[in-house]
Image 1 (cartoon, each protein chain N blue to C red):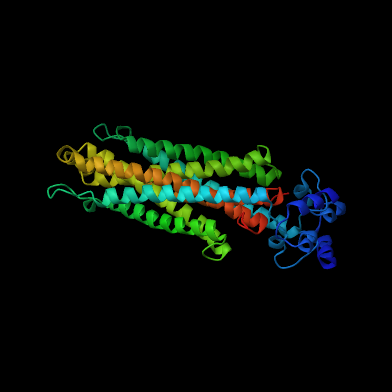
Image 2: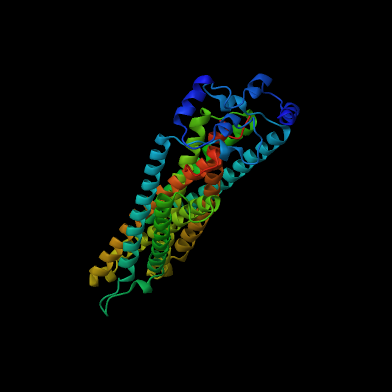
Length: 209
Length: 209
């Protein structure tokens, strides 16, 4: 016990001595877990790396979703060519990727804010549940859209549409492939934001200062 | 502190007094969290309800996935009728739903075992991560399959295939709809098994005796 306390004193940078000695069971204050956590230099570094990883995943997800949406939305150049608007499924692909693009852009800003200011955009508990919930829901949505898009693109390849307008089918394929990569990074982000939810429940903090 | 301990003493049924007094910070034993949790009659009832809920979700998921797989696998009655084997996407639907059906059956057995014997089939930590990982992965897989199936079914409706063989298209539609319901309950199960992972990390136990 003595050892533990000594080590804690060496590592502690911010938290008051009194609060840490209190421990979890000893002080039944309203939010004892929040007061009880403390931060070492090592954990600050880990945290920084974790936040940068989230930022990178969000950024990659944003880039690919945006590219997928643009590729699909711009997929009707020639007047004789079919348009993405003619196909319900391609409309779903375009809209789902657009939504994920906008959401990822928002998350890029939020995670930049987190890195630079060490605080969340919304109140912490709202932010972590918002992130996790939307990552999961939008992940399912964009996967569903891209899978449906794949099936339609495959069946179009057997029809005259693709023989007459190969560029249209090629561009749809590229859009869907980009969308899948966007989904992949959104799913990684969902894992990390799920991890943050667990951290919040464990420590009363999103693995953060 | 006095109040807290009195309440704990009233509720405690199994755990030794010594271990609880020890608390989390006071006893740096190898797995203090596991020893520190205790079980009241209320929590045993809650736990029972939680396990029964998981069991029901697994059972419903099993029924619908099995029905979806059977509907798709049996979808080639007449000799002139097209078969599900002719379409890659329908093969994906049949296989994905079969896999989820088999997995859900296994999970039905596992959760029955959990309810009746108060222990997991595999070691606890393996079981909870196995459940959560497979729920997530198979959830994505079956959603992807059913979305692709929907897109193919929709595009088939515009072709001669559905005009000549309406029964084939109808049966595909039903199979995919059943698959989506199976996915829905698998996603609910994923939420609950995710909650168990959090419980395990929080308390050193899967919300369980």
